[in-house]
Length: 211
Image 1 (cartoon, rainbow, N blue to C red):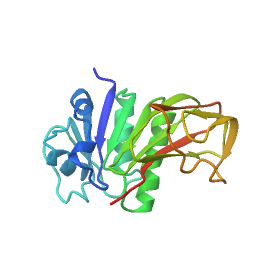
Image 2 (spheres, one colour):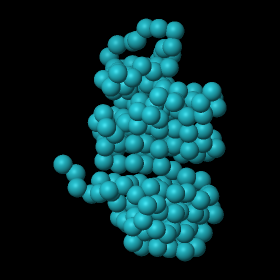
Image 3 (cartoon, helix red, strand yellow):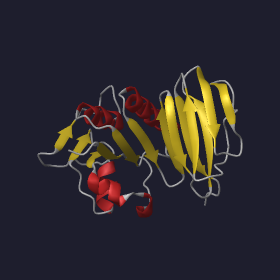
Image 4 (cartoon, helix red, strand yellow):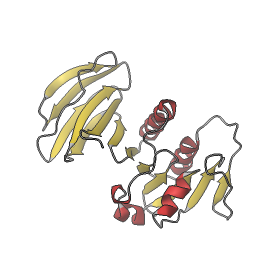
């Protein structure tokens, strides 16, 4: 069984070339509500479809469909993440979870926090933003042409933070959630290397020249 899961969510659609087809082919694919339209627009059929389907505006049929009531505690994406974690997946790529309403975006970032707390790694990939959230450890962030790199504390503080391979480097520093110190850095090598000892770190790569 694969250890990776790809989730298509119902936020802003992504371009076909944003989707890593090789990763999708090897992964267990879940569509959350309107994410089904996004996946099928690219000829991708999911292993599992779930949600309340208020955004999709119809309820799919089939043995791989899980229907939830519209009045529920979790978003459709959080339900998808919960199911995938229960199935034991440890690597997540999420498409269709950027843009749109700010409250939805904050909820989607909370889904990344749930993935990290579950001992897995997750990334939200959009046309203009790539978002990941990390627990203490060491991480490599690949260079992407035309994208900035920003770090935010998703906890009161991130301590023991070291970042190299970037225009602005730092060694054993503390980043709090009350400052903008980590905004708009640049990766200057093949990868930025990030490590920290305590806290929760939000990593965002954003396209600089948006159309």
